[in-house]
Every structure is written in C-alpha cells, then in structure tokens.
Length: 316
Image (cartoon, rainbow, N blue to C red; front, top):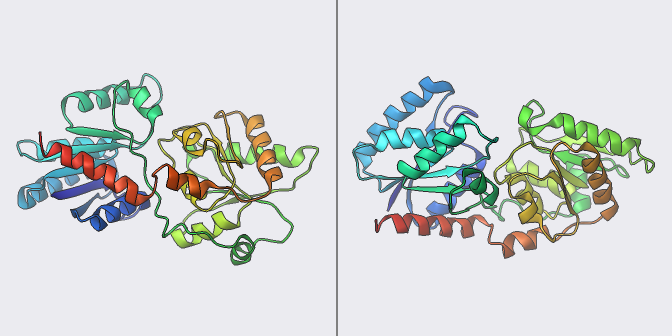
C-alpha cells in the first residue's frame, strides 16, 4: 500500500509539524510505503501551487491513499486526486468555534467528498455532529523519556528552591493565551501562600531539550482557548510532569484519574491559579506515562489504528 502524507509546511520551507513527522515515521516503521508531501508557504496561492504539485505527484506515483492533515490540506488533496482511484483520508486537527462558516464546509466535505475523516478528540466530533473515528496523535516514548528530576533541573539551569511552571508555545500565538498564563501565575504569587513561582516559556527547542524541561519543571501549564488533542499534554504525561490545563480538546479524558493533573474552564483565571497551587502542593511526579501506555497513545499504537483505517478503504 502506497500512501502520500500531506501537511502544511509553514513552519519553515518544507518542514512539517513535529507530530506529523512522528506519525509519518511510525507508519514507515510499521511497513507502509510512505511519501511525505509538505505544502510550502502561506496563503491561497501557496495552497494552489501545492495542489498542482500534488496532482502531478499523484499521477506519477499512483498512490492508494492521500492522507491530508488539516482541513484546508484536505481540500487540496480532494482537488489533486479528482478523476483518479486514489482515496482521500483527512485528519481534522483542531476544534471549531460555534456556528462558523468553516464548520459548515468541513461537514460538507466529510459527508460528500473525503473517503474517510479522523478527528483528534470526541469534542471535535461532537462539534461536527458526525460519528467519526477518534484517533489522537501518539507520543514517541523513545523520544519522551524519563530523566531524573534533580539532574534535569541542573541541565536546564533551574535554581534550587525555586518553583518553575513551564508553558510550551510561542508567547505571540494569540490562541495559546500566554496572557492567561501570566495572570494566573501573578494571582498565584500574590496569594497568601506566596509561592514566588517562575513562569518559563519553552519554545523553538528540539524534542531532546523539551524533554529536559518537562522532567525538570514543577508544573506544565496549558492555557489555550481551543485545541484538538494537544500533544504537549501527552508529552508532559510521558515525562510524569504535573499538569494544569484549560478544559480543551481531549485533556479531561487523557488526564482523568492521574493524580497531579488539574483542569480548569478556559478563561477562568482564578480557577487556573488555584489549580497551579494544587499542583505545586502535590509536589511530586505523576503516573502520567503509565496512563499513556494504558490508553494506547504511543505512536506505535496509533500507527496500527491508522493502518486499519487504510486497510478498510482498500475494500471499498
């Protein structure tokens, strides 16, 4: 079976998101004939050029399936494969605000154009109002390994006796709401307990560096307004890092029952601050890694689920 993996390459020329590459590599390891196809650049002109390139590639290589990540890439894949026998699979990676135009056209493509659609969380499937397979991104446990907490702190240059709350994204990304993180930590430090915690943004780092910070941190904080299945939560769980997060995507499900993980409503700064206080009072590592394994959320587990969906399309 030959698969073309399509995704946005906007982070840099020809570079796809780390979780897309990780999923791609796990499918290669599972024995599939894979080609990675990045859509280079931004804007509709770049997507139009990408569609033309993909159409030529499809006619040259005759793949069985084009698997597109992100809904716009799904439109590109549908146009590129029109008139061929190639099936189109699309992964919906985020969630949707209520009653948006995008929600309506994505529903149309799911029902009438794409051959199979995957969502990353049940919440997104519920927003779409369509019964769809839920296949979250997996975590490569060979990358996200456990390091000794004290040794990791030394590697990250963290001061002894100080509490570090890491926040893993670029502060300028509006939807990630770094302002909520700043306000929650300010309230925490101004409380009666006077934690004097340090909010430490982590971005533009390699996987190896991120692992060190997750093993060194006292808490990982996620303050997004919307998410599908945030990889940073599963990665932090793989490092047994305590977690505080807004209730977005599948966070409540994936962290359920794990001591040292706390979820607050998006935008409720007081609740986020209290969750941070609870996480710091917890004061030890979690059993998140065990939950990732028990829930079948490793890249190897997810690769098998995706492969089974590919196999089902071969019989249609």
